[in-house]
Image 1 (tube, helix red, strand yellow):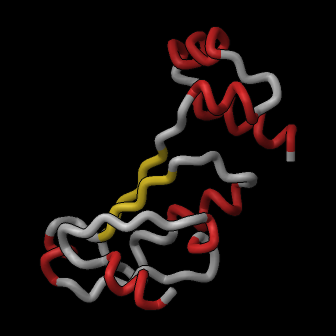
Image 2 (spheres, rainbow, N blue to C red):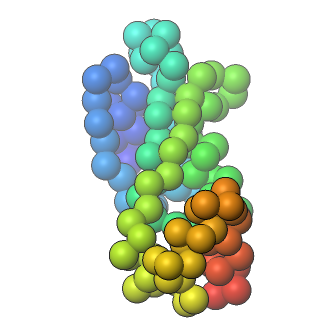
Length: 112
């Protein structure tokens, strides 16, 4: 695990990690080139089961004052399969209002 983390912060590296790396893992960046480019960037491709897990994921990036960023990319079709009450039509309505993230989080929170 430590070797994966160390390699993942090297400039130009893409590392795919499972949910196991979400909690209790510090992605400390020792590469000046990566830090100069804005730090480690984490992309989540699944909806966390809780707000606490979401905060943990976001915290994998900017550690102890270091730079870093976070983004979440979700597949609407997958959310239809996994989130009770999620429909693409309703998602589009919520998106138009700018409320889509809040709506997805509310649906998730009802499930867990």
